[in-house]
Image (cartoon, rainbow, N blue to C red; front, top):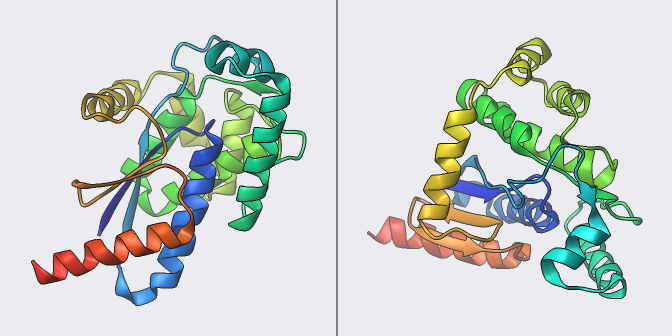
Length: 216
């Protein structure tokens, strides 16, 4: 079973969705053999260097109040805790450009596919748990090291524009096929599971897809 996980490293529901998906796959055990691939999506592709204050950003983008944002943040924190992902109680201070993170994820998928998941999780942890900027080169390199990937190779990638074209092409491919919100989980190039669903929803959907494939 091929699973494309379309997401952004600055999306809290993507962190929840990945943790939920992993729990579902654990429950399925040997019933499903899954190959997980991470595909790029930028929530804020025009975000300038240095990012933006998160309260200001959410107010401008969604017209929400500070009180609504605090309530949503606590709800997200609790949902994360339910699936084993830790969000900082104080939340995020700023939102950042994530293009370089996607370039590194693409590199990992191309050259070290078995470590791409570890890099994705390290990037989520750096931003949502540790409160670090996914825009900063050192933060990205620390995530690369945590994932067991070659740091010097990553440093060279960040110093240039390697994989920039491929990331933009993939982003355009998924938006061109109707993906405008994340996480979007695409199974076997045809079945879409949208949003940070609970583990049981992923489990049921994957079991049904596997059964259909076996019957077909």
